[in-house]
Amino acid sequence: MPSPTQRALARVPARLRPFLLRHRRLVKFLLVGGACFVLTTVTDFELKFTVLEHKPVVALTVATVISTVVSYVLNRRWAFRTAGHPREALLFFLVSAMAIAVNDLPLALSRYALDLREPYVGPFVQETADFLSGMVVGTFVAMLFRFWAMQRWVFTRPAERAHPRYEPGYAAPEMPRDAP
Image (cartoon, rainbow, N blue to C red; front, side, top):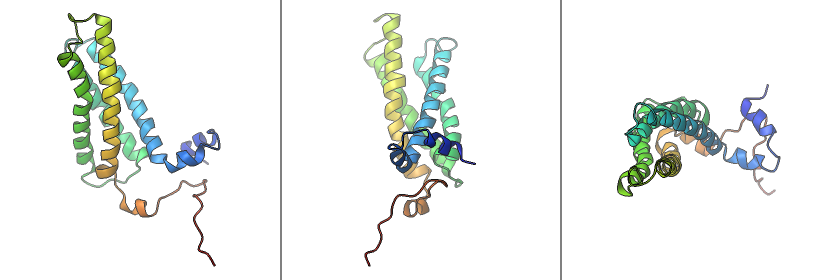
């Protein structure tokens, strides 16, 4: 029985499959990131419009911390598929703490350095600036940092770099043959 990944790949146009297979880890990382982006956005708005109404940076930080925990589980079990080593969780959360600071920085700059907040601007402009700076720009920059750092320090598998594994049911790329 094919895995969910194999079933999804079967629906992708044939010309895109080699690219997706070659960059499988990145594709899975982006899918996990997309799900966590939605979780972060919903949690951020829920906090921002209720209990943390006057603290948008704190609301974004809390939302990002919650989605970071979900991201750890999904990345470890699916995107990077590692059995784990003892320091993995510690490294993941250290990298994520740095990424949360990277994520919060554009929102803090927008709100407090550029004064894109009430009473200097209207509520619509404030919320649009918050979303664009915190959720779009901050998340994008933090995502780039996370992917690089996770692959470099957290989810490392030296043996896989030398001999990549291919999912069953899909042919590996053609290997050059020795000339006779």
